[in-house]
Length: 208
Image (cartoon, rainbow, N blue to C red; front, side, top):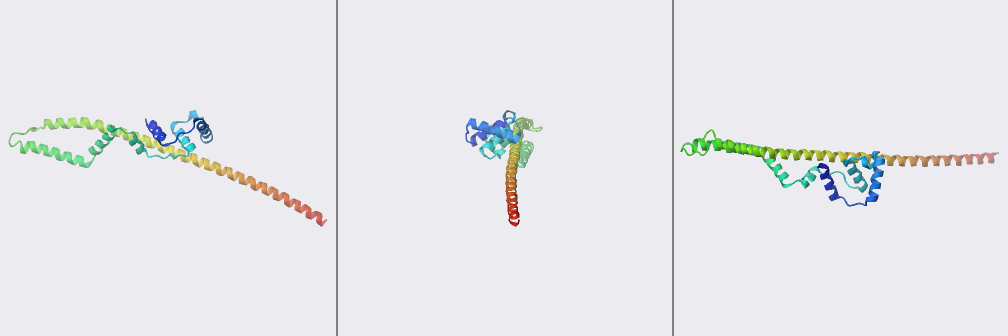
């Protein structure tokens, strides 16, 4: 599910590429950077190589991806969990419970018209129903948060892999340029040495 979410967002943000040239580039990048065949790459590695090939950014906000794929029920579960896990809800709930007990004990109980007298059976029933409904909703929100965490870990891995591969490419390019410079300097040194040898030979003939 996490990888499908990542693929869906990337398809929506990346331009389409020609399949023939794309596969050739991916194969070459897989061999040169990872030393693997394209079929042996996992989903994150394929995404990173595709980003390198198309020169697109790899970093993404996992929360934005999750929000884009979240259903109405997911957002409602997050909202219920956010409200139910706040101090405002706890204080309000305690106030309601205290008011319920005072109303049915001292106020309405004084006139013998209490609708839920002690031991507050109806209140216990309502609390049991609330707990039965609220607990699965909070678990749904926790499961979605765990999925977001896994997605964030996957995105972080892709970003780290992209950075490592880019550093490797830069290092290879620098090594290639340094090698070319060294070869050029060696050729220039050899040419200078040969020229000096000719000059010395010419001077030797003139002095003779």
